[in-house]
Length: 84
Ligand code: SF4
Ligand code: SF4
Image (cartoon, rainbow, N blue to C red; front, side):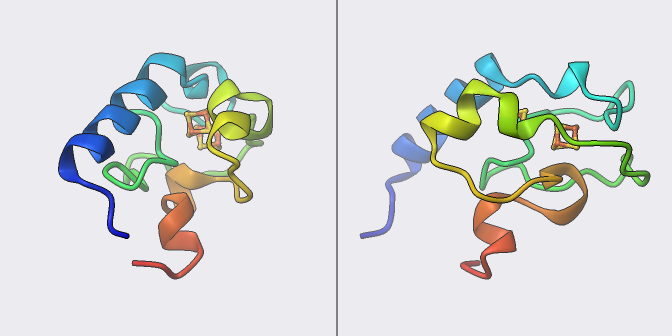
């Protein structure tokens, strides 16, 4: 079943509050909003160089059972799975 807009927004806010992207070597100042794994956010054009991804150590990664990485350059989990 498709998630309601309210549920999507709730998950986005949760991811934003726990996201550790700003401690990642790949993140660049100003590339916001973070929580690139989230379906409402996804990749950021300001980030072009992949210098390591710390997503697997982020609490959101475990909580949302994520499987991909480099969400900032490759797109959200859903996008990388070809689900959107
Ligand atoms: S998994 Fe990565 S993109 Fe998603 S909230 Fe955590 S650090 Fe940010
Ligand atoms: S998505 Fe991964 S590579 Fe991109 S800034 Fe966040 S932790 Fe770093």
